[in-house]
Image (tube, rainbow, N blue to C red; front, side):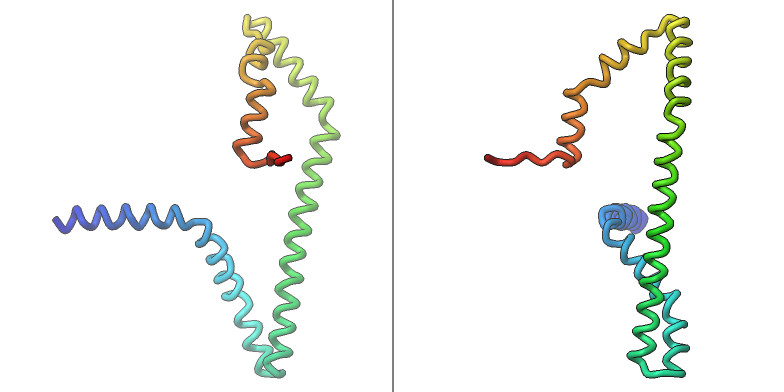
Length: 136
């Protein structure tokens, strides 16, 4: 009986943790940032007033966050530029693949028409919330 209750309780805890992931992820990030910044602020408070130490710590934390965000934006833009620059090579690779598949007796055009159409795209965009209907 105790084993069954333990298994049910652990399953309930696992399901609750999975459902609360949208809360736990930012919370764990905040606790991690506090753990990193706390020693800096406590050392600064030894040499200056608390408010000044807090302002310096806050400024440094925001500066580091902006630096990481800038790095992410730079990286994604670099990937985007390289994809655009190499688009001719990707197109040639696609055409070679289609030609090879045609030689093997597989019609890629039929697969595209069958699985990739406007109705499918519109249903995907509406279900993901990318498209919002306007009431007239």
